[in-house]
Image (cartoon, rainbow, N blue to C red; front, side):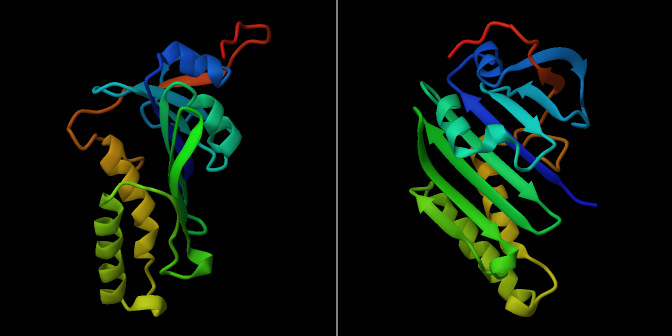
Length: 188
């Protein structure tokens, strides 16, 4: 059993605008363990995080991220532990700024970088490469570079999907999100 999830953190738009763009509605029902297909939580420092129990949820795809990030910025993360694939990406004002992807099937040292990610990626990548080397390199039974996109996304927002607390302390209060009722007003 492993995670197959994605999340998007949007800063610069209201929760209502974000949910409208994603055609979602907040039920208000607590979802502390992220058991629902989709749930959401406000971050203490600002921003709204939408959590998906689907690594390839349509909201995480390029066209949706471009629409969602119009007039704001959106940071996304995808985790598929069954095949050891992970990604982090950021969009702003409708354009992709960068993405960082690890696919274990392309080798334990695989890391694809597009755009201009934050400079801290270099230090994270170097740390995980050294750890991979220590664990046996390309023949190791562990995939350390899987962590690189996750560590980058966590450093940028303070949230990590497999930890109950934020880096800054405290926890997020997730509530269940569901598809908006047909005919509900959508704002773009």
